Amino acid sequence: MSENKTKRSEFDDVLKEQAKLQRKEKFKNDFPLYMMMLPGMIYLVCNNYLPMFGILLAFKRINYATGIIKSPWVGLDNFEYLFKTKDAFVMIRNTLLYNAFWIILDLVLAVFIALCMNEIAQRKIAKVIQPIICFPSMVSAVILSFLVYAFLSQSYGYLNTVFFKDAPIAWYTTAKYWPFILTIVHIWQSAGQNSVIYMASIGGIDKSLYESARIDGATKFEQIRYITLPLLKPMIIMMLLLSIGRIFNSDFGLFYQVPLGNGMLYETTQTIDTFVYRALMVSNNVGQSSAASVFQAVIGFFLVMFSNLLVRKINPENSLF
Amino acid sequence: MANNKKNKNKIVLMAGEKEFHYIALVIMILMMVFCIIPLILMATVSLSSEESLVRGYRFIPDKWSLDAYMFMWAKRATIFRAYGLTILVTVIGTIISLVMTSMFAYPLSRKDFKPRNVFAFILFFTMLFNGGMTASYMVWTRLFHIKDTLWAYLVPGALMNGMNVLLVRNYFNANIPYSIIEAARMDGAKDWTIYSKIMVPLSKPIMTTIGLFSALGYWNNWTAGIYYINNPKLYTIQVYLKKLMDSIQFLKTTDLSNEAVLLAQRNLPTESARMAVAIIALIPVLVVYPFIQKELIKGMVVGGVKG
Image (tube, rainbow over all chains, first blue to last red):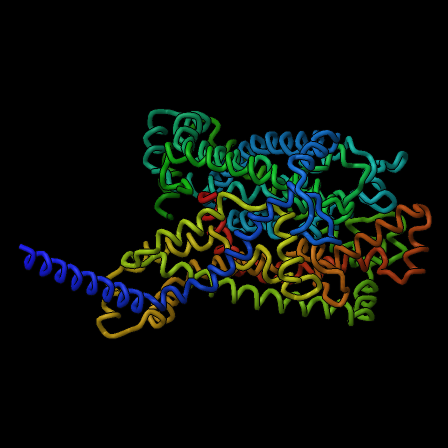
């Protein structure tokens, strides 16, 4: 009996030894794979994971003299100060309002452009139009600010010297014009790009559906209403959900550089991203900057999770997880 | 396609179909014009003589002139330096980023590599959550001291992102049959060989797309400049442009009426030269764009659907 036992344990040992060897062998075999991932892993740690610990900064009062580690913990003070200011209200309101309005506007325009493009797709000119309407998305925010400046500059701008000759408008110091200006600039930059995705989906629709609809006497509008739009619906819903995940984010270049960082325009141009930059780099207020940036990151996390859960329900292929 | 057209002609057009077609055509042409017009204004301003600009920016100037470009030629030391630096950053950044991304994607695509799920999660989590800009800034400046070095353009937030790795991995999975890898291994090929001789050459389309977007990102990157760069010698062309705009704004707030005088006094580029610099920064993109637009537009579809 006992002999049997020792035999078995010996046998187990041999098995264990073998498994260990196998694991070793496997690791040795896979070693090149680990090495390939090493640069990427180092980068992810430095670029993504270390900053996650940086969130703790938001709960400290940073004192560069004593060093970040020795700076005192202050709990939620930074957040309290931040949300007591009018800045917090203005930047959150602006971020949400611009996003909410633009999500709808972008969607309508993108589908509309895609429908028009599809209608003329057979023509040669379509091959010129499509690249051109997509080009603005290649332009950097700095060059964009020069383009806008050419139109809005107070003394030389095209608008003031041609249309408002008698009463030049101080575009860069009057906040109330900027919701319109930014919307137009945003459309200029992204409408073409946004439409591409819908163009691809419309291109994938079975042409015979339209042929039979025409034989039944359906007009163009009816074809769009009863064939194209219903078939685009899943894509539209998915894109809407994905954009909800980004509703607390804004295009920093557009909101910071195009209005030329002008303080008089904060009322309509300040978003969370521009505030984070200004608090950190201009007014040197690390506490408020990190509070705002953590606020954005945490809410962003929940929104992305939420939107992806919904996307997964509709179309698992397009969900992140 | 010709057949299709013939058929179309045979079928009697429905009421309103022709009108619909032409309305769509007109709308798209207008859209195209809307997209081009600002670029044309910028170009003509840069080609206007300084006197004719006093009346304002025009699409057709009273007097054409190459003065702006001459002026920039005189200032070539600064501008060419910034230009060269931008090219350097773009080339190096794109290469490193492609190598890093594809090397990370290959093990993730190997179904027999068990720990891949762990690594995939580590990668994936970065797409859901981030520490925010302030924390990144602190890590890069306080821990890695990249202020006023070229690393500032290359590294923060630019080298590798989860989206691109997943796109490459999916491409590997979908387009390169596992049997090829197995066959190569039977022949004694090591993982490095499989990666460099099979995976990368066979995935040119996705590598091109990602490389182009990465290059464009580096070329257009100006935010790294305003966060991390103070030394004018390290300005890329975009950062140079940004600072140029800043100095113009500064002068404007000090004295609105005498802008031109002040500009001349400070020896800053004049109205037309300013636009000329912007044009010069845009030219490489403009020149390359016609050749790469197909890949870029394809990339917009793939990237767009995947959020």
